[in-house]
Each structure stands twice: as C-alpha cells, then as structure tokens.
Image (spheres, rainbow, N blue to C red):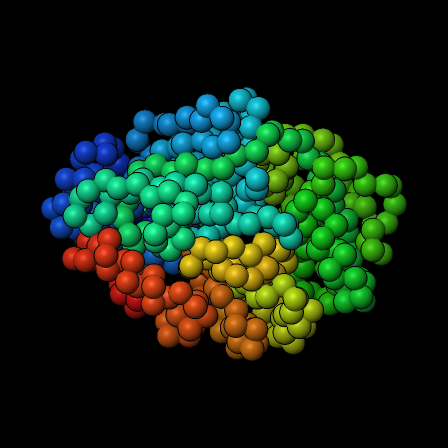
Length: 412
Ligand SMILES: Cc1cc2nc3c(=O)[nH]c(=O)nc-3n(C[C@H](O)[C@H](O)[C@H](O)COP(=O)(O)OP(=O)(O)OC[C@H]3O[C@@H](n4cnc5c(N)ncnc54)[C@H](O)[C@@H]3O)c2cc1C
C-alpha cells in the first residue's frame, strides 16, 4: 500500500496501492488504458469513500493551470485540477464571475461539479449547472468531449467520477459583480414559520444557521447586491460583531460582513481562501428536499432536535434552484438544503444521521453525494428518476469498470 493518504476531514484513509501526484494527460490516458482501477482525488473535501480505490489514486493538482476565457467572454475553460479559489481571482481580474460558489473556495472545480456541490440562493443552480462542456478520459483511455445539448451530457456532468477522469471543464461565466454580506442574530422560530419564503428569498444567497440548542435560528447570513436598511430583520438583530457559522467560534476565517461591498468571490463563500475553512474537526451531511415542503422539512428536523443537538456543531438551511442534471440532488426540483456540520466522531454521529433520514423520508430527501449518509443504495436510487439511464451511461463510458470502487459498486 502507498504512503497513507487521508481526506481533508481525516475520517477516511484511502486504500490505494499507488498515489500519483504529478501526471500529464497522456500519462493519465496510459494509466487508464492499463485497466485500473483508477480514481481521481480532487482536493479531498468529501467525507465518504467515493474517491477511494485499491489501485491508482491520481491527483490532478500538478496539471498545468488552464484559465482560457472565450473570445465572446461567456465561458471559461479550466483544467481538471484547478480549485475555485485559484480560478476566482483570475476570472475577477478579467472582469468576470461565476454565478455562485460553495461555502469554501478551497475545493477543486471537477470534484465539486461531480458531486453537485452548491451554494445558496433560490434562483441559483448548483455549481454543476455552470458546466457547458467536459473533457474526460473514458475507460478505454480515449479523451472525449461532451458539450451541453449532446446526448448523455446531462448525465455525465454530475458523474460521481464514474465515467472517467475529467481533464478540463468549460464553465459559463457572468460579468463580475459586487455583493454585500449581512449577519443577523436570533431569528425567532415564529417568524421563520410565518415568513419562510420571504426569508429564504431575501437575498442573492441566504443561509440560516442553528445549533438546535433552542428552536430559534442562531443567525441568518444574507448576501445581497443591494444594501439593507438599518435595524432588525424579521425579528432578528443585526450582529454586533463578525460571526463564524458555528455559534461561538471565532470569526477570523469568515468572509467580510456588515454589508461592506466586495467582489463576488470574497463574499459568496462563508470562508476565506487564505484560512482553513469551517472548524476542521468535523463530519458533514446534507439532504435536499423540495423547497415547497421547506416548512415540513424544518419541522421534521425539529422533531429530532434532542437527538441531533449533542453531536451537532451547526445546521445550515439554504436553497438551490432546480436543474436537469440526472444525478443532481436538485434534479427537477427547487430545493431546500439541510446541511449538518457534526462533531468529528463517526460512531456518535451515525445514529443522528439515521434519525434525520427517517424523519426526512416522506420528503424523498436526496443525500449530498460527498457527505455522510446511511440510506441504503436502493432507496437512494429510487430518488432519482434517471438513475437507470445513468447506469447505462456509465456502462457505455467504462464497460470494464476501470473507475469502479466499492462505494460505486454498492450504489450502482
Ligand atoms: C469545510 C467543507 C465545506 C463544504 N461546503 C460545502 C458547500 O458549501 N456546499 C456543498 O455542496 N458541499 C460542500 N462541501 C462538500 C464538498 O464540496 C464536496 O465534497 C466536493 O466534492 C469536494 O470537492 P473535492 O475536489 O474535494 O472532491 P474530492 O472529495 O476529492 O472528490 C469527490 C469525488 O470527485 C471525484 N473527482 C474529483 N476530481 C475528479 C476529476 N478531475 N475527474 C473525475 N473525478 C473526479 C473523486 O474521485 C470523488 O469521487 C464542503 C466540504 C468541506 C470539507
């Protein structure tokens, strides 16, 4: 076995025989053509075994960075190893932006896209919805391209690394924009119940954070292009100091607040690129439910508040717009995301995960691909209308199973 490689959270030690940190695209093609098994490790921010392999684990971090803005300034082509934090500054310098970002810029674009990673905003699709084209090495070692509108494209984008090694992506871009971030403390539960759609739709991106120590929301983070009037907001008070998403944690790694305008990439994530994100000692889970059942979903979480609170650092409630990507958690439904940052203790956390999955079952909750979930594979499959089509697509791109691992074998 190779020197031990772990994911960011440290809860997974990969079982690879060989780890490749410096590869070229032709070398990758050779490696794949040799039959594998091969998996790509992005920035390692997933919390489960989806990136694991017993064979060759390949990092694309060492690929030459590519940031090619199209002549019409509508798209950018990037390499398969770049992270959002590296891309964002270069795009902004060129007067361009991505439509949204996740809570952290540290993750690789390819890894985030393949798991349908998302930020928040009722009108914002997840990060995979910005993909206009993909270049990937399929199971026979051939480098192929797929563009939006091509057969199978909607199945390939959120591909869980099962179709091949993504060597480059073309992303839609928009003109660079400025945005402001405001934080409000103590949003009363009664106002949340009475005004939920207005609260969730009050900004470009809205996130509510609660540790469920009480039924109220600890704080609400609003990212808006327009300034907010002074004073309370839905009964919540403007924060009197900078906040970290986890109540009580020092805010030095949080992005600028208090409504100070700044570039999109310095406000849309909650965490700054130059610091380690979140708390570091943690596990995460997230489920997507239909937005029009948001009230029911929050009530379902509240019912198990006493079970989850002892192992919970914070629950983030956010929104994602519907899309057409077959394995996106937001496939054909505007969604409410219920994200949980847990303590870093798998055995203690799993009962809370299962309790939530039971409560959220009537809402057909779809678990985030990159996080911790315990739902059995048949149930997960049943929540995706196009799952059989995805399976057929994988069989076409990788008939010999070069990119398979135990996690995918169980799911597929
Ligand atoms: C602190 C923290 C905050 C987070 N915040 C959010 C958030 O706000 N929103 C959200 O939705 N998620 C969030 N996540 C989850 C994270 O975005 C996902 O786990 C995402 O997949 C991480 O990207 P990665 O590059 O680290 O992927 P990895 O974990 O390295 O890999 C994920 C999958 O992608 C595959 N893969 C990676 N690169 C390639 C490639 N080039 N070709 C083929 N397959 C590839 C891997 O094999 C694996 O199957 C957070 C995670 C952490 C640790």
